[in-house]
Length: 210
Ligand code: CTP
Image 1 (spheres, rainbow, N blue to C red):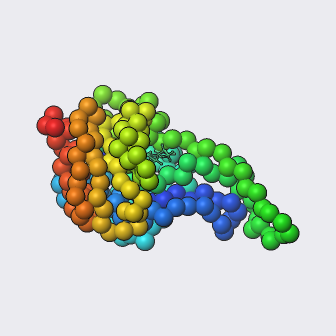
Image 2: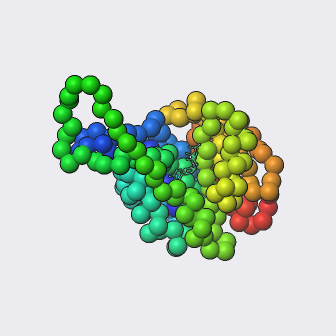
């Protein structure tokens, strides 16, 4: 399969040197890329800045913002068999990016944000027969309920849900649901092991094994 994987937390710039981001380390996206390559797939890794060393056999596309990630996914989506959105994409971005570094002034600084494009939502509207969409959900409450809603709302084939305690860590415990199937719990393990299981699960999806 040709698999497109996104990784890392996007950066939304306020001015040329300041941005809003999140605590995503990019570990899960890189681990997925490695696992997919080891399983014989072709991988395009679209990654926001991370401290991870991406696997050298993947095609790497470096991006920073949610808008750039969206453009990169749009460019590579039509030729892929599977899109795995492991990136923590910002839901909001500043309405304006100041052209120059914002100077300190008296009183409060108010930054107005506007929603970003939902990349998975776009992909689900443009997907062709047989293309597989995998979403990730980070939920601090009602994990399975909220993640199942995302699976439905974004018309995904599979969702991987975890709790914010996994962010930035090497280990994770995830809950996985394939559309129409029951929840599966992957016990705590390194993100490398979890990634291998997820890639195997996708192969089962393709071959019709649940
Ligand atoms: N995602 C996306 N485009 C966005 C935001 C998120 O494609 N602009 C993807 C993420 O990469 C992830 C999935 O959607 O695979 C769920 O992301 P999450 O932030 O948990 O969900 P949201 O739909 O943004 O909902 P909320 O933040 O309110 O929980």
